[in-house]
Amino acid sequence: MNAPRQARGGRGRRPGSPRRSTRPRAPRPTVAERFDVVDRLLDGEVTDAGGVWSRATAWILRLALEQSVDELWARLAPELMRCPMRAQLLALRSYAGPETAAQVATVWAALSRAAHHHDYELAPSVTELRRWREQSAAIAAVLSKVESR
Image 1: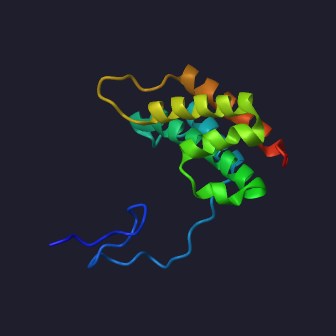
Image 2: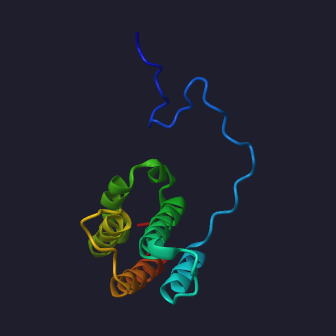
């Protein structure tokens, strides 16, 4: 007997599973708001994060970077927003230039590695997180100025 097929991308609702909530979603934080939260985490203002604050910071930075890329696609090529991030990074070369695309890919990969917990690896240091924060902010500024070619 065949198992029920899920919708493309594996995100379909399985038979018998509860329906998704129809509550309105909270507004998406801006890139600047995400950087503000990162700054608060790095300055020690947020104490509720406990031992996961460094990985949470890496996740928020990665979200800010991805959102900056999303905003570029929303302006220039909305159809690319549905592609996987790795495909978007390849397409970025044509829109933002090879140097910027390489910077985005490098920081995104570093944040992806840092955000995932592995028992045999140390969490990212404050120095690394601050560097990634500055790089992400610089990239976001560059991407916000990219215009159609």
